[in-house]
Image 1 (tube, one colour):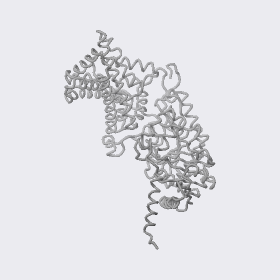
Image 2 (image 1 turned 180 degrees about the horizontal axis):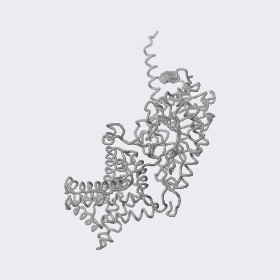
Image 3 (image 1 turned 120 degrees about the vertical axis):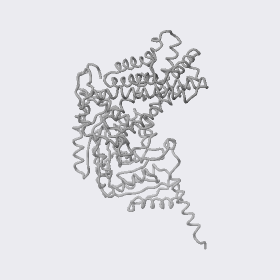
Image 4 (image 1 turned 45 degrees about the horizontal axis):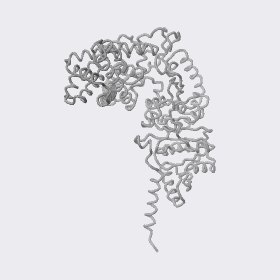
Length: 622
């Protein structure tokens, strides 16, 4: 957003219809309340980040601090001027803040704002801090190893680096604490100002000047201090680790923490008005109780989603909740109808449709463009809401305006905990734009819910073909098939593919047992002995004139390969009917999801082959 933009600005980073956080402000500056709203919106995203995401972002931040240590020690040997020596000190911090990495001292502001508003619990804040601090320390330690053994420093710079560390250890703990407190004030103040400015140039200037005060003021930052101590231990070898940590790093840590929290966060919090969150987006937010605020999950809830427009969808734990992210309300009406039909088969079915509009960051942040997008989305969703009126389900809609698409689906699923996420698959769908995001995000994390991805060719549920080799993902397909059989009077056919005719009997026995175990006793059973799974599915779908083909994920997973556009299924392009691909959360490790663990079909058939052999052996011989 440019400095001369005279449009109104909508405060939070991501906004949704149903709870638009409109705060019209003058084009030159934000009020304190509006800055606080932006911080809370950003903290909402941070506090819901997974452990892996937080840790590795913090790891990158800790390693970036090594650059600050490197250039400060190197520059100090090349000049007698303290000012010149410190000129490049802020470089590592610029990488961290402008680049969006996690830094412990930066986290004294946004997550604490949530705690002050009783939107997040104290245990959740401490967990967040521990993960980020551990990542920062790990990154700093890796950087110290590189500096100690990589030949990066020349002799003079190495001596200067040792001097910095020894000077810190020799400084009295009380002095270190107060120096750390002022450094914490500087960092948390940078975060506050970062949300108050509008352009990258201003952010860059603020970050540079602020962090320049740390070396010039002889202040201490905990991650830099930790990196110095690790370097000293590695180089000299005879440094007592525990005294170095307790007499140097910990006083700085306490000072940074209390300086950021007390001198900036609390002060800035109380300089805002009592109406700081008195806007549509937050007015229905249910604050944590005092007990929940102090004990977190031990006492109930540990976090209240700030973006709570789908709050009603998570209140009833006995309900069956379906989340339907869509990219185009005009073309995905049948997907919504299908979701409603599935939900209607449940006693308390709920459907929430979220329209994800992917835009550049400056449009997602707010302004007249954002407002027009939200209004147009709400108009398009009117037809979608009329679909929900035709079914006996609890129905709702919302809009997310964001530069992300696929990641927003996962964020929403983690927050609202649906039973099923129903997605469209094809051109101009959310998968296409997702490829610009984190390809391995799903691959390295457990799914937050069941996922059903639909290639829509009419979604006629009259004749359903369900190929299966066993496993949790085909179990999900079975549940969907059973719902269609009950609610839409669908004819269900089950298919199992074996490698050779000798395995047909084992395949039939498996399929019969599987059907009985999954409530599909009335389904037709088909065993194909060609050994070619995809051709067998296409051939059977054609012979049975199937209107829907349902398939579970393979051992390597489904969603990660859809996002990376590496999933090639001939079935999806050959069969005339719709194709439904299902994947269920699993405990598979990263290696198993990446490379697989062998053929499930082989393991299944081996059991039934052994059963047949045992039965033949038990027969009396004539």
